[in-house]
Image 1 (cartoon, rainbow, N blue to C red):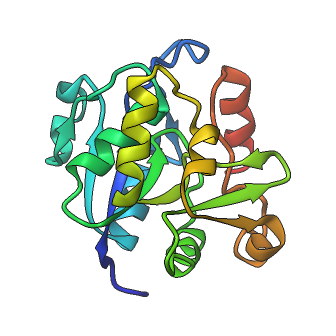
Image 2 (cartoon, rainbow, N blue to C red):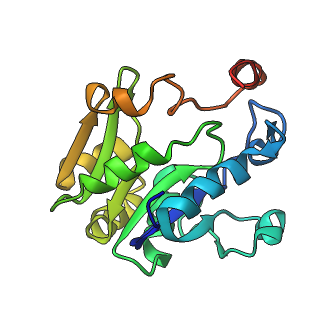
Length: 197
């Protein structure tokens, strides 16, 4: 097993409201473990340090990790900005807390694609995956300008930075079951994920 990369901070976004699910997605049980722990385990395997971004730190106090509140609350872009701002490394790997099958091999591949890019983002058959991606500190200033202007569309950031898209074909061998980018938003999504256990 590869060692964690000391130049990467894993940023787990835990600030979602879980409205469609009706319960806190971070603590949904899958294979006897809450989703947050599944994501955390993979982040700790790949990244040199980990921090959580969200506004209710008491929910996650048991994990002994920094939980930082959103600087610009209310959007995923704000969560990325907050994570980048607080990271002690030049690069973060951002991930939501509600992906049931986080994939360390894909994370490592995206990290290996950094080169001189400001962001490395998967591009799947469903579109870009901006919240399972690499961002560097070079993104902070364009993110700040967007947030100050009230623009929280992450896709609009990509025209302002040097970006590397990693397409599905490049990731296929690392995701043989096609589950790496599953995201749980509704009770039906949760039941489907449980069926893949």
